[in-house]
Length: 214
Length: 214
Image 1 (cartoon, chains in turn orange, red):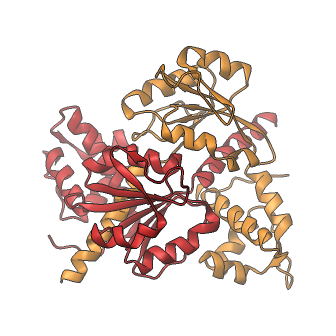
Image 2 (tube, rainbow over the protein chains, first blue to last red):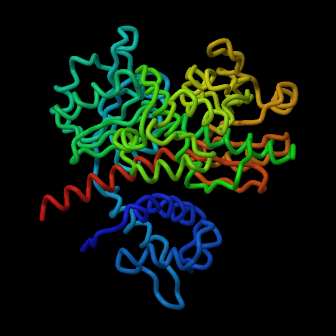
Image 3 (cartoon, chains in turn yellow, orange):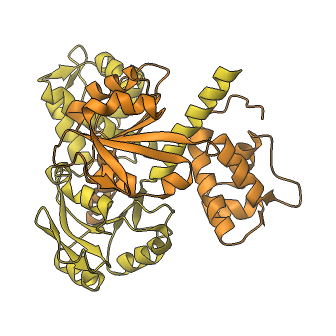
């Protein structure tokens, strides 16, 4: 399939389309118009048409979108038809939560190991997936052809660990540490800053309160 | 302090400013120019000036920003000078990870309890914070004046639980369920869709591979 350059904004929205299409499939809905999809997703129909047009336009006039086809095609675009090997660096609660989340595996993200410095965690398994000591990092990455590393460690150690992972060939970092990472241009970072998101809630709660006080 | 209407885009960026200013403080840096901040944050200096201008302009010509002052003021804007009571609905690994993250407490987010339906979890404590049965939900929310509920339960139950929380007076939902929530306009939702973020990584990995194959 030919890819033209797709804007970051569209890419950011694709997983959400994929999620909604998955829900439609679960509900047994086979086709949907951009208008109906617009109502569900609370996005304008014209945005939907524009976004999906990036991929050759799956819509047919007067018929709407074929849900299963669109779901499969967007899945392919997102690379979900491929397997990605993942490790989790940091085997605390968050690392274990990610490991326990079997939906990732259904989408092709196979967790090959967790890593920690805590001797009490090393040797433990979660869903049969072992916690290794950090000394095994390079070995496991190379042996299992790991592409993605999730970083669930404190921010103070995150920068150094990211450098180390990159030196072992990791191409994508899923960063949960409360800091931004500086990595080479060919390494991708997707950060989940939980505190940032909680602060946005707090902002809105407190500005709401201020408004009510006025 | 007078608030003019601040755009959602600026609000979304505020927590990141707050995080960088916190790091500067930790490094003992007392003042910083928009140029230096721009270099660190990889945002243009003019965007920084524009963003911070929304709050009355803390910058002084030729001096730059006073880091501690700006940190405190943005903290206030974000409502971090107030305490917010929080509950966690879903006491699995992710719920426990959130409860264990003491940084939230430092920012004024006080976790008052976890809730679950699993009898093996009920009665357990994490950092002294108990897991209650769902029957206690209304009671704890009212007694502890809880404003924020984190939702770390499967998507199939998330909609119904959100309705229930709202009926008990919850004003803000921190949603980790893999679905969007429909709530009344005066209830705020901040969703952390982990799968969406993982799919963005996967997209970039696979489009990278396709490019290399060409």
